[in-house]
Amino acid sequence: MTDALSVSPTPAITRISDASQAGTLSVALTDLREGVRRWYVWHRMGWQDTKLRYRRSMLGPFWLSISMGIMMIALGVLYSSLFKINIHDYMPFLAAGLVVWGLISTTLIEGCSVFIDAEGLIRNVSLPLSTYVYRILWRNLIVFAHNLVVYFGTALWFGLWPGAGMLLLSFLGLVLFIVNAVWAVLLMGILSARFRDIPPVISSLIQVLFFFTPVIWKPELAADRVALIHFNPFAHMVEIMRAPLLGHLPSVENWLTVIGVAVIGWAVTLRLYMRLRHRISYWV
Image 1 (cartoon, rainbow, N blue to C red):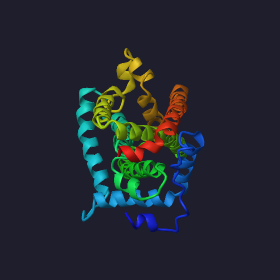
Image 2 (image 1 turned 90 degrees about the vertical axis):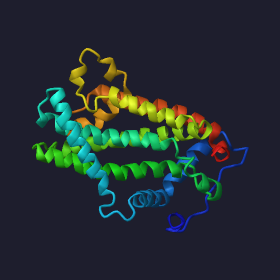
Image 3 (image 1 turned 45 degrees about the horizontal axis):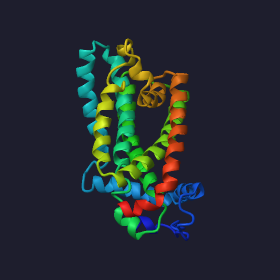
Image 4 (image 1 turned 120 degrees about the vertical axis):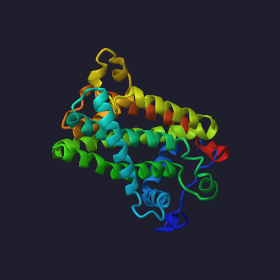
């Protein structure tokens, strides 16, 4: 990890601990901006995390794709039979849904321990706290890229190709996810550093939300329970990335909901970050 912090000359880092500056919006925004500016640090940390997880493995991170592929085939065969859905329609839907949900759920679960796991670095290295948030996000985007192989393999096997325009639209959905993920990880990290019961609660909630979100079941199967979809922001988040991969346009409601969640989420998180940022190093 020391290598990651010394890959290039690090400008003087401003640790904003002055009590007179604590609690201001400019301090919170400076931390977020300085974290982005030190992209080479969290970029290296994220790669290092992924490599360490699969050290001495012959296939390395491609075990992620293999695990995802095995689960997708098993669930696809089972649920296409239970739901009586044509497997040619269901498998690409399931593959895209599992890949997108994996990105969302893992980012949130790992986000709870973003500051707790970085305790040693926070106490001994002067870096913007947002660096650790970007590290978590980058690490999960690497995993997401590996898992996309499963989706594209499935789509090509069943003769589905969404086209360049739809792939670009799905990428726009991914950008919106990143905007939401930064505030969500930051918020989860702050709350979890203060209240250590939060991580297991979030982990349990994510498991429940998986079944309430149309990942393994199609939205039309819940036509008489539309509230499950309309009032579920995770359903809209999944859809803005999954629908273009399947060659469909996400609805206006999907876009507006995700944008609205981003606005509200950032407003709440920035307020909290302004007030509590300087306490995080004492909580971890």
